[in-house]
Length: 398
Image (cartoon, rainbow, N blue to C red; front, top):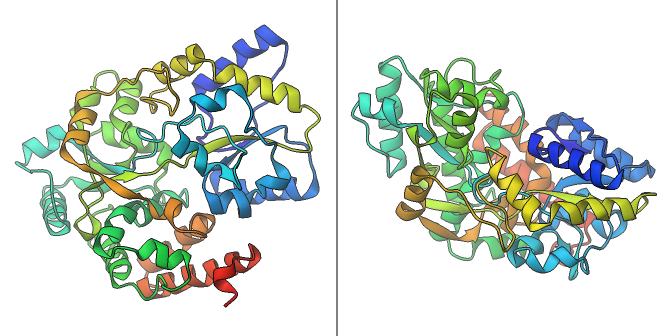
């Protein structure tokens, strides 16, 4: 069982090959993203059979969303573990035990950045912005020219949230030690001026119409189509968006599109985000052995490479022995921008990621004038306190 968009068509093809070799059939059950965690928790709590399930990696998620120590099989001693990037493995581990197999591109599919249409930028003599003010100037120029500056699909409930936690590297630069203070419960989101400013800037983009008139109903699944038409100049997307567009619209090339960091708070850093959708074997499954065989099959170097070569939004995977397929635009992004030294907020700060869909609702409330940035930050703090107490976090028992 997996959330929408977590299972790639290439994985389904690989599952067919797995069945041919082993006789073991995999039935993929895909749940809409807005419902996924509720459905998953119901199944886990009621002991219903899900042999394999996917979940977002991350310490607080592994503990609170899935109770991995109880509901997932310990994979620490599997043969493929030694080829998995240790930083990635840590995001799926609790108390030194590995519970997840993260077969996910944690760079191309995890670096959420601004994808821009180079042709449109050239037509209007636009340069890549380096500050938030410059970004708004670009947006204003495009809007006056009749081009919608940014395709932002809000209807899925999760995408528009990315603007805020993805700049975690920058908030840490502006206030060194902030993440540690938040995890130690000696600082709050509501008490941080930079976070309030970031949300205010995001709201400003919406209020000025830079996301267009249909943002609230736009769908993430339509991103490549929207960007292929020339109606939109930019979108917040994975570092592989160009490859995805080329795969869907062969008249366009991946390198027709470029990338730059989310410019809130004048951010100019690559986002460091090693946590992504991760395979777990259900501890109460009657087919643990078969599930492990599937993971073993996927982790074979030839199969990992096949996934990379046949998945448009993957350019690499976090395993040794595979070859990446970066294009010139992606290489230019790596050359131009330094990598953040700390992780994005949802990976670095406890009890943020489990509130993702709630944050999506709060942001819509902010966009539509029902709530303020300050209200949202207070809600995050309240949610963190509730989750921390549920996890018996000693920092919240003082």
